[in-house]
Amino acid sequence: MNEDQIKTRFVSEIELRGYDDKYIDRNEEREILQIAIQLGVGVENAKLALAQVCEDRGYIIESSVARQIRSEIESAGGAVDRRNFEAIFENARKAVQGKKNDREIKKMIVNVMEDTGNNHVKTGWFTNWYASLKRDLGI
Image (cartoon, rainbow, N blue to C red; front, side, top):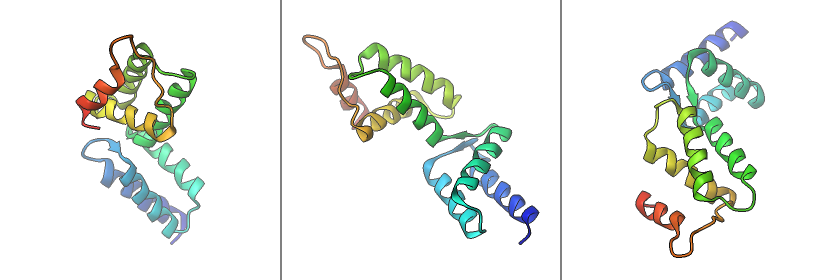
């Protein structure tokens, strides 16, 4: 395959997966990158091309939203309090542009907190808002 055919195939694979909801989740991203590798495109070039195509088409990439969440959690310092969590939630809500509901966004934030080990939270004297939130989300 020549370069133009590879680009066309790559763009069509992205459009097939993001057409219905304009959202590329982690599984769809992995599939797209695997196809790019099979076509002989390097991983870094495939990620850059994926980001460029998604930006041009107005698609949201879940892993980039998760990176944004991770950086905001890390910038909060040693422990996240409820106010910081709400600020991270509002920024994530803006980033997903209505593609995910509030519950899914909160689950994503909690999962990132748990995965990165940044699940130390500041709680009140008599309440633990984080444990209550996890219970409400079913995590």
